[in-house]
Picture: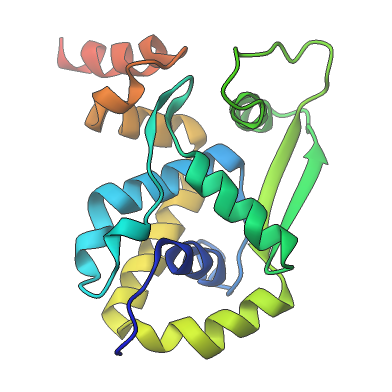
Length: 199
């Protein structure tokens, strides 16, 4: 274990490792879910990786739906372009959970402009998993650089994030890291929820 891990390595590991299905390369459903997953990793798990080059982790800032990272989107697009990651885009299903996920994804996809309405453009739901080339790269170049304990941390983390509803993840992030939610258009939906519990 001599090589330093990078932020891109962590992204590939989280895509590679099993989650709630216990199968490797379990997809991460939703761009917002993936964004919040990496944000939570940066805040809470990175200290478990002593050979991680923290300067390579994506930077986050408070945006319309909480912490957002242009660096992370650039990393995803980079890996899609070199055939390491498969980004699957699906038209919206008719469930509330899918609608919520796509609503957040849609507005993050629009970038740094104002929030767009989805009324005239049917929303998409994104999912991410590794392509064969990405799997091979992780197995040959990254897995040997983490301990079994670190692997267990990441599997447990992915399982939890892939199991929780997007609302639960957003509520957790907004209440634990309120500064990251200061510009959020839906902040009151989640911060007020915590305030009601404390009354």
